[in-house]
Length: 64
Length: 273
Ligand SMILES: Cc1ncc(C[n+]2csc(CCOP(=O)(O)OP(=O)(O)O)c2C)c(N)n1
Ligand code: SF4
Ligand code: SF4
Ligand code: SF4
Ligand SMILES: [Mg+2]
Image (cartoon, rainbow over all chains, first blue to last red; front, side):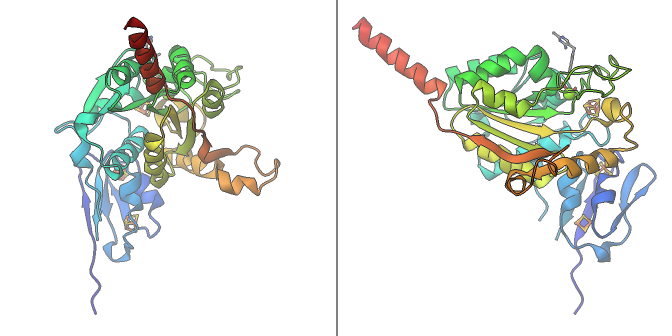
């Protein structure tokens, strides 16, 4: 059965590129592309929400 | 499920002004989750601050807010609470605002045990004005005004609050984001003056001067030094060296100021009859 992938929404106009979400994601799902964050490997996401919880800028939202 | 922060954010106010990686945004999110957990009403919730980067917080919040004078959040908030004891009054601000210029207001709000919650974002520096040392800057650390290292010892905000009479004192960190809302919610529910210190980071004026290569290093430091109170019970003094306790540090039931004042009003009215 195909597993249902989460949606990771990045609000680019809020993201300040601090790296916090990239660094503390346990599965290396995210990466920096220029000054803002981007999704590198959505399949690896375990929907732990750590990125959304820690982002100081309200810039990343994970919907399971 | 993604959390809907927007319901407590004043429309059109984001992005906020805080620097990349500044922990104040993480604290604001924790506060919003706490308000949501407790299902507080906007018209019944007042957030009051002084001046500083941390004190910008109420400006983003969609409820009753007051951005006052430097160090004076407690004074203005006391006025709000005395006039409207039914309101949930939350104070917020930085270590400089709360323990330097506002130190006197802080200790007397603790002493009175007035039913309000004070969130103090301790980044150990005056962030807004370019990094002067604050009463919370540790000995030896660098600030723009202590380029050769700070000779002063820093305050322990939690001990100061307990000593001054606050009846609920807790500590968290900007790294331990999912604990912030729980501490703030418990503080709001407690009847009396509640202090929640959040160990915070200012990469711009503190981190750079004190050899942190990045905000990630600052976050890792917060992770490394924090020890939950329960875990600390099983550790000896040697193991606790350089650590700080987190969680609810102190809780006591004692007379609350608005209720005491109401009794004064009743006595005075009785005497006048
Ligand atoms: C009466 C008065 N004195 C001094 C200042 C300048 N001032 C503005 S913010 C600040 C310190 C802020 O530090 P803190 O409360 O720790 O907040 P942070 O910026 O670190 O979040 C100072 C000294 C002022 N605005 N008003
Ligand atoms: S939800 Fe967890 S695993 Fe998925 S991107 Fe965010 S931090 Fe990484
Ligand atoms: S934590 Fe937030 S602001 Fe920082 S890089 Fe990630 S999305 Fe951008
Ligand atoms: S100067 Fe420091 S406290 Fe102020 S917004 Fe920047 S990082 Fe935050
Ligand atoms: Mg400060």
